Image (cartoon, rainbow, N blue to C red):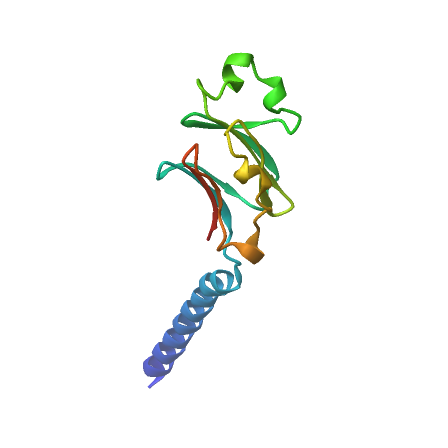
Length: 139
């Protein structure tokens, strides 16, 4: 009789511990907000992904994306790098959860004049057709 009581107590304790462990795993998963990211596509290939919560500036030069200081711009590049016949250049800023194409050496500048995108209008990408560039927000 005593063995059965001890077994029931041990099983009860194990079940409580498993229940608490399961809750400690599930609660953070349920409460976590999905992090939104900027995704930069060039001719359909992913060049860059960056979280919206981190402010940064990027330069897209041809097929390469790199983070640059906020002070850098088209005017800080060499004449060869700025030349649209030789290179495709876009500057992208992620600031305060918003994404903006601040500068480009493309011929129509539609990407530069497109308003910033954020989580509120995440379904509207910024597009630079001459450079084959798409800036979109994804989860």
